[in-house]
Length: 94
Ligand SMILES: [Zn+2]
Image (tube, rainbow, N blue to C red; front, side, top):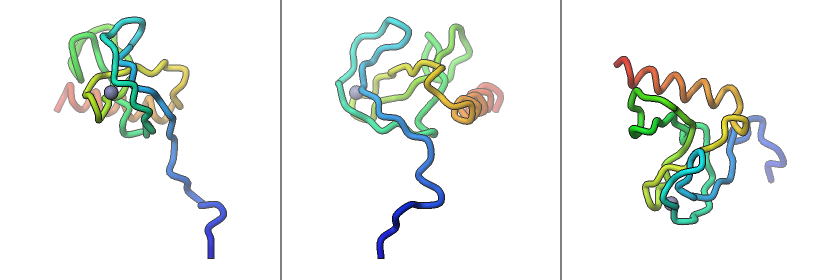
């Protein structure tokens, strides 16, 4: 028997190329094509990962090269953004 359609697909996922870019700057990524899932999206600041500073942006870390690539906010569902904010706040106030 084959499953034609699962009731719960794997959830939100988007294909992204590692460019190492966020909001117009960055030093270039490795060009890997990645399937970014909800739990891969984090909030970053100019001062590094999960550090309290402005301006903040959404992005992911490439598993190949470790660089951060930003994702425009308008490409992210509310649920993904909310999860990232929850994680960010938890890390700010453990
Ligand atoms: Zn990369």
